[in-house]
Length: 104
Image (cartoon, rainbow, N blue to C red; front, side, top):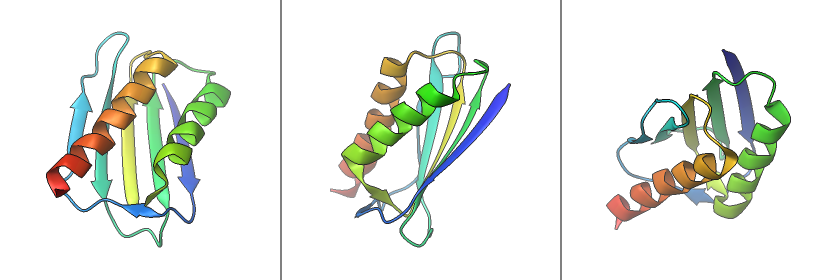
């Protein structure tokens, strides 16, 4: 297992809804827990992954996600069992969209 942590400062979009879990931890998939929490405008992403040695790919996927959403005061925990970058992006977008849907 490998643990990766990322922090993005000065986000612009805050989420105000109950925490959400999307996806399942199984072969080729992942689970995303997203929650609103005071982080001085930052977004923190913590990843536990069975696929060791893919830090640069994770960095690219998570950076792209944050560029799209510009999240602030948000913590995301990812439990991964070998999901492809496309699945990671899909689950992250799904988590944010569910939070935004509840806030309406």
